[in-house]
Image 1 (cartoon, protein in one colour):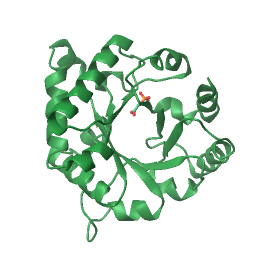
Image 2 (image 1 turned 180 degrees about the horizontal axis):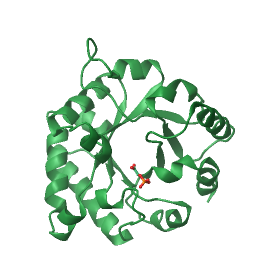
Image 3 (image 1 turned 60 degrees about the horizontal axis):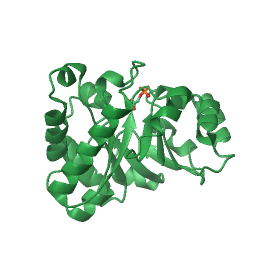
Length: 235
Ligand code: PGA
């Protein structure tokens, strides 16, 4: 299981130092990836967990004020990076073409992209979820080699489930994950890991964990509760 914690724009330096001290004390059976705010990447250099970034520039380097390159992330021991989270798509008006460039630049620098995809409530109600998800996958994974595809991780995060307390049924998640895996196998003859994300907490985690085809979880708000996360990982 892969457990990815997305801290978003939370925590102060003091809180981050205290948080890191707690997670570095344990060993985890699952692979744990912590994605703090990029300001705090240097504070997360423990060896018992992996480090993820929440953002990356589509550019290799050069004059791009306010951006961070994949090469810079790599130099801070970043192994994973979120791409296309619904919040960054909205805040930065990211297009699928930009996301495709970000995935390519990450792979070139040896960082695993975690491509976040998900439908809105309206799209689900109108039975458009499959179309929306497959269009996004096709555009974001354009022109990737079979070998590159096999390194990408997909996170299925229904937009209506993020931070809302609403979680799809296990059946809905299982069907959607299966659809994503089948689409990628048919298009690229490769298999990928698929995570679920959206309103996961200590209580619903035990139910979500029983979904047989999910390879891990992307956790936002609950990931800020370091004790809660450790208790969850011990279940
Ligand atoms: P949430 O966020 O767990 O707070 O719903 C998930 C995410 O945004 O990745």
